[in-house]
Image (cartoon, rainbow, N blue to C red; front, side):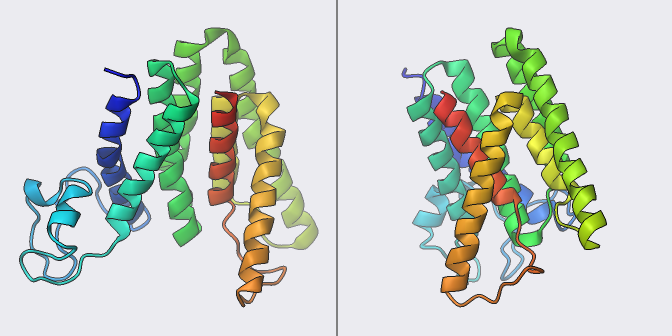
Length: 244
């Protein structure tokens, strides 16, 4: 069996979990024990209705109980999780590294999506991602654990220092604590040397998005809130894949 097949087959199920995290964590709803239900009629969904991507396609995108349309959110997240696994498989050959990168990618997908919708980066995702990065480094490339541990510390300290300086100079928040913890995760996964590239690429992506939003007529000025997490997550993913 090719090394890329198991993570690709598992990806829709990972995407289903990511969708649950995106919807429930910001609302402080239970993740593990709450049963899935139709948002239209409240009917509990059985196992046959919860098969990622397939159930949505077979049902025609409608609840079998009340026939109300099912939103495209969950199949979109599941498809994005497949894209994460496919892009990792194209960049990485070693099975253990491939699984590690997929875990990183699925975590970044959840964090980026949540931040885009709510301007939040939950500690329940950022902090485990830091530990997972250090654990993956220790297991797969132990000789670089010092560089990655230093990267985690530098990422957090760098962004926290920048945030405090911005607050002092401008009198308002510029970078949240979640951004600092996400950059700490970047250092844990990619090492301290990768941090400048991650931050620069994230800033360029954010500026490009802001520019496109202005061209589409969005009202934006110096005080507009722009989530940095999605761009930081995408930049880290690109840097990790480029490193192979």
